[in-house]
Amino acid sequence: MTIARILRGRDDAILSVQVDTPVGDVVRLLAGNRIGAVPVMDGQRVAGILSERDLVYRLAEDGAALLERTAGDVMTAPPITVEADMPVLAALSLMTRRRIRHLPVVQGGRMTGFVSIGDLVKHRIDGIEAEATAMRDYISAG
Image (tube, rainbow, N blue to C red; front, side):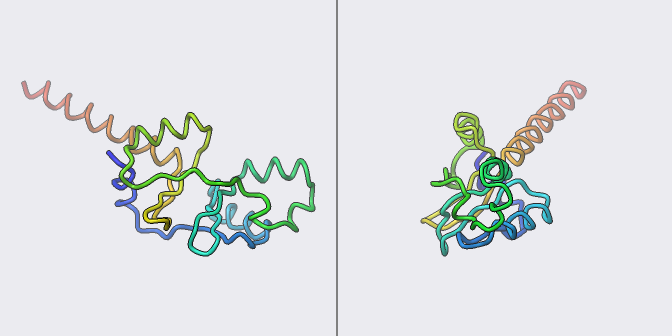
């Protein structure tokens, strides 16, 4: 299974912000959509990722002044990205090794998707459950 398979089942738009987006607007976007991170774009190019963790670390450093900064000031950069043909298990391994929870999916330099570790784990569990059901059905039919 590849990342492309996970993305194929989606029809929602990719939420993102620009590097000059005020941090306060990013916080409202994350909270309003109940998401933990957002890709930060410089035009059509993924420049970084801004996560809840980035916000907490910077809040500890900057206090309320953080809200006056921009996404580009706070994001983690450069982003670690993958292509859609990457196997899910390879992406999970990458995320575990690099201790990251979100991956922009890029093709030809343009972002085509955004996946979280939760997306990949859910896909993996669904596959394992389907295999277990097929095995039970096979055993009970025999």
